[in-house]
Image (tube, rainbow over all chains, first blue to last red):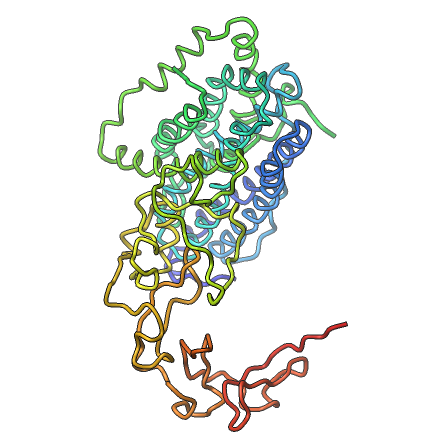
Amino acid sequence: MIEDVSVQALAPEQREQIGQLWLERARGELSTAAVFAHVASGVLAIGAAPEVLSLTARAVGEEVHHARLCHGLAELYLGRSVPLPRAPEVDEARFGDAPAAINRCLFLIFQSCVNEGIAAAYLQENLRLVRATAAHRVIHELLQDDLVHARIGWAHLASPELTEEARRHVRAALPTLIRLGREAWLKAPESGDLDCPEHGCLGFFRHARIVEAALQELVLPGFEHLGFRVL
Amino acid sequence: MGRSHSREPERPLGRAWWLAPAGGPSALVSALAAPWPAARQSVTQRRGSVNAVGFARSVLAAPPAPDRLCRMLSQRVSRLFHGVVVVGTTLGCGGHAGDRKAPAASDTSPAPPEPDPALRFAPAVPASTTPATFPGAPRPDDCDSPEQFSCESFTAYPACAYYGVDCELAACSCDGSRPTRPDDCEHAQQFQCEPGQYGGYVVGCECDAMAPVEAAECDQPQQFQCSASAPDTSCVCNSDAPLDASACPASQRFSCRSYDPPTSCRCVMPIILR
């Protein structure tokens, strides 16, 4: 188990709270692995570019690795061994009755450009504020991978494999994709909200600014960069 | 045994689940099930619809963040643009992430030179997993010689280089007084650089006057070890070095660079060719 003096200095109840949050993050990483498994299956089916295929497939394993990192950190804070949470059951996303190929494309764009883009901004802020050595190391690794995961969608949008029909659908669905991203990240937690940035836990009150900054400075300019004008 | 999101799956999708660990269907799943008809309608019936334009106005015309905190956050996030969107776009166009010569890149820094075969370590990760450095982040090739690139904390440097954070902590600069090659030191053996490479460069070099120049300066000649040879550089007295074969595990072989006296000794795994 990792040693970290800043963790040992915490009161037992603080360690428990922080540990439980990291355990929840481990479960969330498994959830993301499951989502990327669906995305990977989808990009194979739509014949995406080889780089998109390989990065998406690799993302599945990397998210599982993230879960193990978060789980290890949870155990460090909890001071005891706990089982790795089970991966939540995740179904393939359905964008209403969109045609299958369009659905797969939209799912990739949502998961990578929007969701992982916001995640990168979140982790960037997370990394800036974290002080505990072990948490810093984990967040650093999560961010490093998520930056790559956030590139995949942009790679697909720029690739010759993106059909003109898919491009039209993405353009039209853009408001929906952005709204979904915002809603997903701004859903208030029913339990376990804790602001302890030095140990990698950002309180819910911080999310709105991060999400808006991510959308305004990264995601929307990204779509504009690729010729998807929102205005 | 799959289930449809439109039938309210029990588990949520995606990244934000660990941030909003609420029970039952997540906002994302519910939203995925619900909103598409509106979006689809705008695709099939109302291209360029009022909905889309109204949304765009609400997003893009939102008033700027009022406080300094928000401005700083926006600046930090905007640094992600290059590493995510521009590099991602280059990938889709057949390039490789981290390719500094990519035409779409906004970073105007020069491309790194071809790898020097004398470099001590091979790059550990393929280019497509290497985040591009942020524009404005200090880089080894900003210096006349990358070897003169120096940071107060090389541990913090990757976060600065790739994500634009902790740059104050890393405190990197070009120090023209530092040596660029072994010959710049009084003894080549005292030419020491940071272990590993940063952006493919050997950095943080200095002349360590305390480093041993020859085996006789160590307690035992077996302990005299250098990281590179021809010429010997980065030499140390390694107190953990084995003094004879009995110090090596049975599966390993006692090996020295020379044997009269035994100098620069290690336990090495034998290579078996079949």
